[in-house]
Length: 322
Image 1 (tube, rainbow, N blue to C red):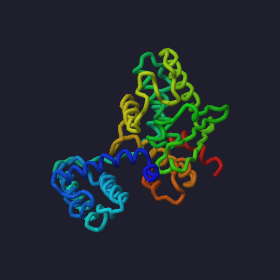
Image 2: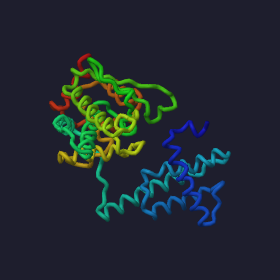
Image 3: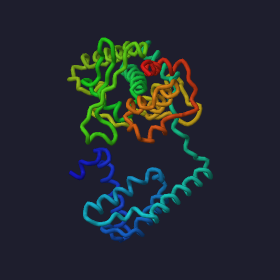
Image 4: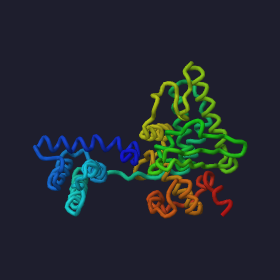
């Protein structure tokens, strides 16, 4: 029960990370249960020297150590002031090395509505005649759907056909797999009126027609996964969203003015654009699945973004009842 209280993806990460610490201790002939704080500090130093782990990604490694200790009734050694200082020191050293090596990481940026609109138009004009073109159509469709639904990569790539509905007057999606909420067993339904986003219905129908045609031609049983094509593996990782967004944007030569686009850029773009056109924060939080009292949503908003007609194209409908 304790293991299931965490997300499946989180538990999948903690096992290997705990084993990595145990192997480190065994290699240096140090006790790993219970492990003293000094060993954890040496472990952080070894991760810094290894160079493959960034300080911003260190918390799951420390949590893995604490978890297996606390499960066995030992105090977690990877917490406290000394460990916090070590993590900050690791961050400082890595930042200094990045400057010296001119390897400063570019910031993940939000996807402008203008780019999404280009993708939208390209999707409608594409009649796929090969598996490669069908994958491109999927990438185009995914970008638009992820954008208008404020979708997380994990949520968007795991959509099922039974939870995507094209009604007479609206497009609706039922979201199940969301960070931090799976234990609540709550379905969240988003609805977008067809008149709210022009040509959204045409895009959805265009993608679904060519997807279903491919499955019918393959003589395989079509699964419930919404984005799956006949030549795909049975399950997607959330990281596949990076591939789809990269494929769609590179095909149209859509480049960021600064930073880089990633799977979260559609979510950041939707949030930024919605706020720019004047959508109330409570609506943005609902659409994005954020708590009304969470500050996390602020990290997805560029307050300097200027309203334009492309933003209105996708999100002005949300202000109709305000």
